[in-house]
Image 1 (cartoon, rainbow, N blue to C red):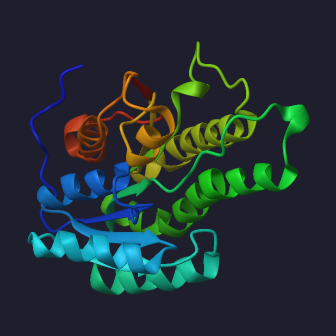
Image 2 (image 1 turned 90 degrees about the horizontal axis):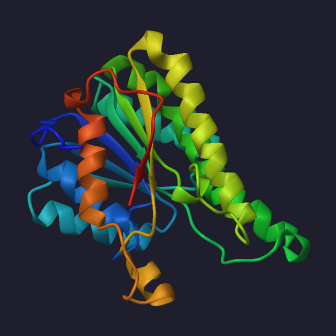
Length: 242
């Protein structure tokens, strides 16, 4: 598919989670939306790194504000949504819940229940909590949500050894489809990307450079497209990359 010409988000609010760590996909997505004029609200639990990323963006003329928080803390998210509603009464044009993580390969029979719960929390519970918190602001702006799934949960994918991660990402897909159906009447769209291995610092360290990667910039272009009016009525779709 050939993506439409780059969209602009001049002055519109984009909320992103999981953007604190250098070398990961979040920092590229944030920059791509910021360079298209979006005002960025960046949420992550790592306060120091989050502020560092926001400062780097501001140094390049991008509007970026850091909101350190636990992304599963509904009360903390309520405080942030109230503050953003005051600063941006037009609402949220884009929500991109990037926060997540991978726990390595372990068969179910040998798995650690605490690690299972951790992966559900960082991948699925964070996506749910931020979605729930920002739906009113997304309705106000007729905004778009782009979730991160995984190629492992697409047709032909394999979750052997990664049941906890796969279950969490399958849950993200179910969340996306529910939100797309429930919020269509309110003008809110929801889609999910399912990339294979993305070229991030973490993946390069774990898997080396001799495998095929999806570039972070490719992911960012797709997100910008799906967040923009250029993607038209597209909603409820799981899009595999790679």
